[in-house]
Image (cartoon, rainbow, N blue to C red):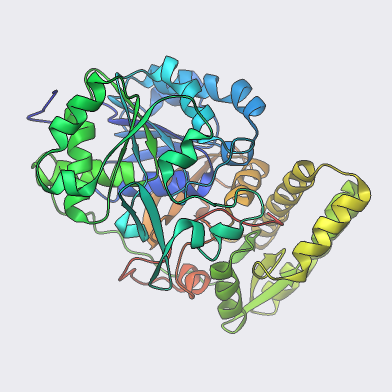
Length: 470
């Protein structure tokens, strides 16, 4: 047991996020607790990393959630080497709070297998629950809320029918066991509430259990999970889980008096005009698009089937840019989209076009995300706009790469899990304010709130994987 009378100097947490939107949520949890955090959008150069040593959290956003194990084996170890070099006591592989994964795509188990030899630790906590995000784990089963109604994950209206990583198992231990041969245990919330967590952890470690899942369903279990992670970290500890990891550590540090209970006074101011893009197909985003259309936004639909052919997609992106700039010139805000919800016929049309053409679905989806980023890049530069929102986890990764943005810092709350961030870029977007919104994140007025400003008074619905087209 490590214990602590004060937090150590330097970075406390180094994390890799398996998608961009989730990575910004981890940054949010630390920054808005008074622990400044920087999120790099690619493994940083030694010079950029050296300049970031004053941050308490250092993250790297990635796209592993949408990649196969072969890609992970090539790309994750170099990123994990960077995390190891930071020397933070906690290294975190950040996953989506709906545990989006499968053995063939976004495998959390494969990521853990690759991380353990590089990031160490004698045990590896798995923490996915996040009450602030409407995610609750009980006896190892994950539940998620939609419009205030809780659903077991294998019965969740979005995740149970996700087109890439559908959840047919709510027991996260069973789900993860399909992806790794490492032994998996559980410390449930009853054991935590009865004061038996320390003994349960000791017994599990003595038995050689490598991955130990921690139930989280309320503030008390969140604090207890954070305590177990922090006090039993030894010299360093590798953790897998959602932004609930950062939230649990912050909750414990506050309860133990290691950081102040107060929060920075961060307020979201409004802007005159805004342009946004969406590659999300979630029903939550669909509602937000509809609300935006009724409140000053010109919604420009892009024909994603044209992404099957590179030249046609380039032409379609050009058309979208022209339409968006015309809308902005007429006094309306611009929102480029590829679909409105999971039942949009555009999804079936895209799948049919991919099948007919023989193109690789992953390549087409990458092209869609990159094209959306190129469109946004052109719109922001031409119209000289200050702020934007990118909706869709995979879309965010491709779009920000296309825009030449290499780092983000959270500056104000917009929606739980989607902070407004200040971009760092070697190009023209060094002062752009941007929010990355996962499919299930935010209330219906999210796009309008990004434009108009205002306070975030309550938690919003939370992120999950996005359907296609990206």
